[in-house]
Structure formats: C-alpha cells, structure tokens
Length: 466
Ligand code: FAD
Ligand code: NAI
Image 1 (tube, protein in one colour):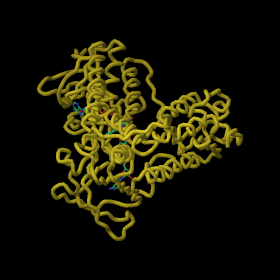
Image 2 (spheres, protein in one colour):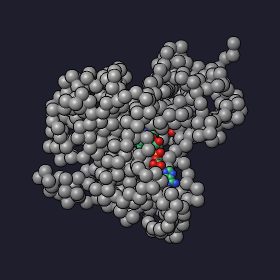
Image 3 (cartoon, rainbow, N blue to C red):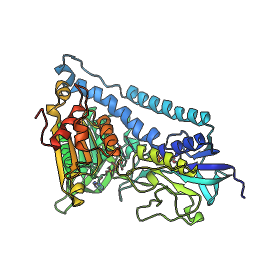
Image 4 (cartoon, rainbow, N blue to C red):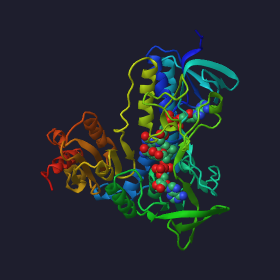
C-alpha cells in the first residue's frame, strides 16, 4: 500500500478549506492545508465577509449620526469622519480573526503549507518546490472577481476598483458608479454612500439582487433610492476610459437605445465572481471544469478523480462562506468514513445592508413552478412593535408554504436584523416545519422575530397585528 505524507491535504484556507482541515484533524486524520496568501481565512476573512462587515457596521454608526436617526432619539451629535481609524478597525478585525485560525491549526495539529499548490498527480502536490503527498486532496480554492470586458481594474490607483479595492479607498469618492446591483455592489455602495459619496448603481437586469424573492428585489430598489442611491436598472456599461483621477463611462439601456455619458471619480466593478482553478494543474490529474468554470462533484463532494474532493466557491451552488464551511465539515466526515451531508435546499442568504435582506428556500416564483398550490403570509415590519419603536419602518417577513401540507418552502425578510432572524426559518425548514409549527411557537416580546410568527399566522389568514 502506498505511503503518503498526509491522510488529507486541503488546497486553500478559506472558510471551506480551513474548516475541512480542522474537522479532518479532529477525526484523527493527519492533515495539512496549503494557502498562497500571507494569512489564513481566504477571501472571507481577508477581503470579503469580515472586512466588508467591519466597514458596513462602522459606516452605519456614522450614517445614524449624520442622517438624523440618532437626533430623533434625543442623541444630537455632529459626526466627523476619521477614515484612517475606520480602516484601522477593519484591519484589526482581519488580523485577530486570521490569527485565530492560525491558533486553531496549531491546536488541532493541522500543518500550514505556505505557497501555491499545483497538482503533479492525484495524490501529489507541488507547493513552491516542495512535494507533498496525500491519500485525499480537497480542492477548496474559492473564487475571484469576474472581470468586465474592456474595463481594467486598478486597485492601487483607486479609480476603477473591484471589491478588494473598494474596501480600501483612501478617500470618500465624490461620485461612485457601481456596475452590478448584486450583493457586493449594494453592500459596498452602501458603505460609501453613508460616508458621503453620490452612488449610482448600474444593473443589467430590471431588478436588483437576482436569486432573491421578487418582493425583496422590488422593495430593495425603493429602499436604496430612499437612502439616496440612484438606481439605473435595465442598463449596462458599454465603455470606460480613465484620464487622471476621472473615469468616463458610457451607459446604455440593456435592451438597446440611446447611450449616455457619466463621469465618476470611482467605479466599482461587481458583476459576480468566478471559480479559481488557475495554475492548479487540473490537466495533470485529468479533471475538467464545467461551462461555468466549476469543478463538479457528487453529493459526497467527490470529483470524478479518485481521492480528489472539492468544496466551496469552486463547485456549483451559492458562493457563500457558510455553504463552504458546511461542505468542508461534510467532506472531511465523508473522508473519515462517516456520513457528511449538506442540505443544499436550506442555505440562507443575507445582504448586510440597512435594513438587512435575507432569505432561505424557494422564492414565491420558484414555489409556483413546482406545480403545487401554495399559501403566502406576509407581515410588515411597520406593524412589529420593536421595529416601530426603533424607528425601523422598512421591510417585511414573507412565508411561503405548500397549501396542502402547510410545509414551509421559503422565508424572505427585510428587517434591520433579518440576517439573524433567518436562522430560525432555516432551522424550522431543516426540521420540516409547517407554518402552523412556527405560528404556535412562543416568540419573545418585543423582538423583530415576532414578525416571523405573525407571517406564519398570516399563512392561515389569522395574524393579530395587521
Ligand atoms: P475562498 O475564501 O476564496 O478561499 C480560497 C483560498 O484558496 C484563498 O485564500 C486562495 O488564496 C487560496 N488558493 C487558491 N488557489 C490556491 C492554490 N493553487 N494554492 C494555494 N492556495 C490557493 N459570503 C458570506 O457568506 N457572507 C458574507 O457576508 C460575504 N461577504 C463577502 C464580501 C465580499 C466583498 C466578497 C468578495 C465575498 C463575500 N462573501 C460572503 C463570499 C465568501 O467570501 C465566499 O463564499 C467564501 O470565502 C468562499 O470560501 P472558499 O473556502 O470556497 O474560498
Ligand atoms: P452578484 O452575482 O451578487 O451580482 C452581480 C450583479 O451584476 C447581478 O445583479 C448581475 O445582473 C449584474 N451584472 C452582471 N453583468 C453586468 C453588466 N455587464 N452590467 C451591469 N450589471 C451586470 O455578484 P457580486 O455582487 O459581485 O458578488 C459575488 C458573490 O459574492 C455573490 O455570489 C455572493 O454570493 C458573494 N457575496 C456574498 C455576500 C453576502 O453573503 N452578504 C456579500 C458579498 C458577496
């Protein structure tokens, strides 16, 4: 029998890879993890979830002070922006959390191999000249920004940036054009709008946030407009030139029509992300990617090459940190001979704007497409006592249930804490709950979560507070 250096070698230390490595080590497997960045944690901790939330949270405070929300509650302050300090607390959060993973690797005896991994054969990987062998290799190489043809990103110059550049702007732009009204565009557009930039969002489709329930998408456009962003829905950028510190953009209706020119001192390109397999040497092991550049796996996260597994953004499914983490755990458990399962039908998604927008399960349109009759309950946050008291009038909770069985098929919410509220819906759906189960569960008062109970009561046509 072949002797290997490791039982498991994970390529990539993002939320998929580092979690897989820790779980594999916990299960008694000799494990190493290769990472080409200076710090562990992948996109999520270094340039994604964590730094964006650090800027969103800090800018929320600034906005609350600047836009009258605080003075309405009797706290009168004139905010002064110290952008350097705001960036410093972002960098501090990254440092602490990435350092935390290095600690967890030591604690669990996971070896960190620093460098870029390239396959030599299915059980052999080259890491900067060092040859490492393993019985099982997990590909967790994540994703990178999708480029927009004809538009060159230069994060150093800070005129045309991607999400990484938009997290690090040295000055608040006067005018920022966001190309793509998806999650990144709305989160990072919100940050700079709150700090004083004029923000214009150019979205190819007729609505923001593809993939979310249509009620969320329609309300999102109204809410962001109310906050001062300009929404150019059904438009596309057809050209962009940079002269000095100014970008000149040509924008046209997606369906064709008259072009218009817009100047901006910052352009954020956020039209999606693509799987990262560059330089991985997949050809050396005979593994091909699909049309979207993703590595296909079976339900257990096995690729078609024996001993090679894949998880996270590099495989099909939503590009979300918690999806990658759960796949990492399940994959490690399968390698250890256990039964690791991820229920891909119940993966919550959250947009961390103000208010937050969240959902889990089917949209109303998707539920209708199943052909089964459905019932829908919807409850406005305006009628939720806590949201009303907190001066948070926007949003709703919507529950979609199968008419005959009453089984909950999807839950969608816009609320200040929708990201936290959606966990209850995910748990309910994971246990196969009916809307009646949620309606008869006692919810603490006064909480935003009572809106979930009321929406569930609404499925039966009997909410109390509307
Ligand atoms: P990644 O986190 O991308 O990690 C892959 C790692 O592999 C990288 O560190 C890379 O350097 C390394 N790597 C790649 N190739 C090699 C190689 N050949 N050798 C060695 N190392 C290699 N998701 C959420 O759920 N919530 C959020 O709030 C959220 N916010 C986001 C905000 C932004 C601005 C961005 C860009 C993304 C955000 N995401 C969020 C998405 C989230 O970051 C990803 O879904 C998640 O990081 C994917 O995890 P992963 O482990 O698959 O890959
Ligand atoms: P996205 O897929 O969310 O949105 C991209 C948007 O750009 C879409 O609305 C699309 O219609 C539009 N678009 C595409 N081409 C265009 C063009 N030429 N002109 C104008 N609009 C165009 O992608 P985004 O925002 O870049 O995020 C990438 C990934 O990162 C997402 O899949 C998301 O899951 C993940 N992410 C998750 C976050 C979260 O969970 N809170 C936060 C940030 C990112």
